[in-house]
Amino acid sequence: MSAPCLTIVRPGLFATIQDLGRFGHQELGMPVAGALDPIALRLANALVGNPVGTAGVEIALLGPALKVEADGVRVAVVGPMALSLEREGESPQALEPHRSHTLARGDVLKLGAVSGAAVAYLAVAGGFALEPFLGSLSTYVRAGIGPLGGKPLGDGARLPLNRNDAPPGTDVELPEPPDYGGGPVRLVLGPQEDRFTAAAVETFLSATYRVGKDADRMGLRLDGPTLAHTGSADIPSDGLVTGSIQVPGNGQPILLLNDHQTAGGYAKIATVISADLPRVGRLSPGGALSFRAVTVEEAEAIRRRQEQTIAAWVHAIRPVRPAGGVDLVALYAENLVSGVVDIVNGNGDILNREEMCGRAP
Image (cartoon, rainbow, N blue to C red; front, side, top):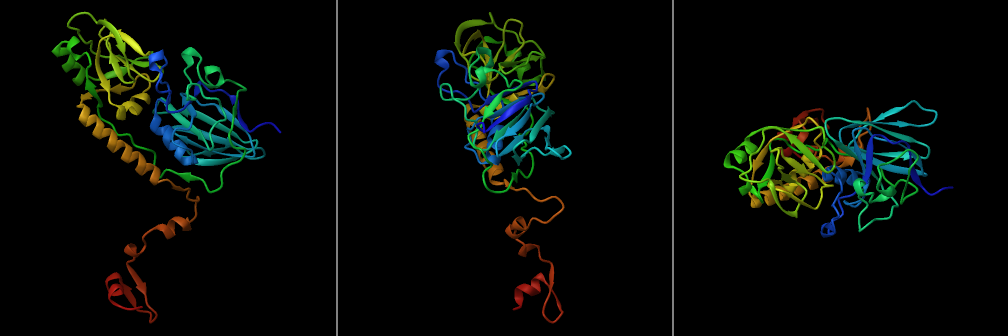
């Protein structure tokens, strides 16, 4: 019998292997890459019991179909997308995202369209048995770096698994999809804020922009009011980070994402704070966004609160409640005493909660 794997029977539009990024090599010109929405990947891994940074499949627009060639596998999808299961001898079955599913050999998991966001994520219990490059399994397609020759998942590709069976235990779920919040995208002005007119900075912080059609993993070209420079848009090339907002000579901002180049020569008006990078990573062409400036200290506090929220989401993961039945495990775990209104004693008298607290049974 061949080694356990998931085989791609339909590649989808653009699905790649991504973890949380390839850090520490930008001085070599190597982008960080990694998941555009690291929160979703982290939650998908939590649902299948993986370490937080385990690589999964990032699915853009339309997902692949994967056949299970293992005795069993547990998977989880986090993100707004349709998915279904095809099992031999049975009718196709719609599955829910934001929970785990235990699949058997020969099952075909079909990942459909992503709606309301640019990406969704598939995690597999135990992860993929793939060779990392510079400590990461992230795929950087422009340079052909990463698993599977640095390419998106193709027809017939095999994703080797570290496990041949699903881990013990029942499937689990998030009580509700994660809510990243809304409002303006928060950023820190600079480092070349002084290269723009005061009116340009005011416009940038008050206008609504839309993601242009040329959006990809490298960055989002934004359509909206032009931003005037005080002189030339060009500067001596310096370092870039994910979230940098460059403004070339045409005055239209470019918000850099995970696959951005490591240095550039356009003035940067601001940098998106790390806590809001998952939000912008989820934006599709046509999506609207506006901006609000915060201080570095505020950005750090926002990130700390975000980590607390993510920890709360992970803590809230619970066993999947059976359809149409009572989940006794969840029922016994609840504090039922505070919900008692009345009870009948041994003499047939009805006691309310206050009487119960003052009488022996």
